[in-house]
Image (cartoon, rainbow, N blue to C red):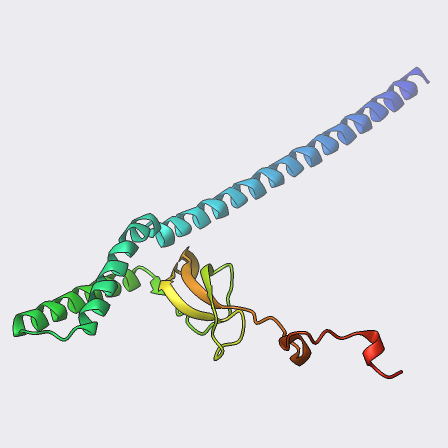
Length: 190
């Protein structure tokens, strides 16, 4: 019987060791799977960061060039308001237009696009309102003038458009427009 007890004890101890090994194996497997998942997440984040860097690396440079574009466009607009007196002046204006076209083409090659704001509803995520104007032809809250064009880079805002917005009209009743015509409860029949 003593041998039988020793065998039972050995089996119990072996079963406990096997259970401990299985638990340790499960724990190590879980840790390994978590480490693999973390490595995969890190790889994806790095890929996204590299893609963003490729797409938006020129954003700061482009932001610095936008005032140049603005000034070229202002120069062209000013020249168009005055007829060229000599062929040399006309050639100069054509040259400035060509420079502006080349610069805009270069910006577009890098995903930088001008936003068309005029006539659009005011959107504070895309526009910066710098003034309100009375404009009976436009609904209130509509962009009626563009002071500085806005630009996007690969569908991300690079610079908001600086705009003038149609003013909201205050409702005016016909009675309120006439002086001395204040409505009183006693004036209305019951």
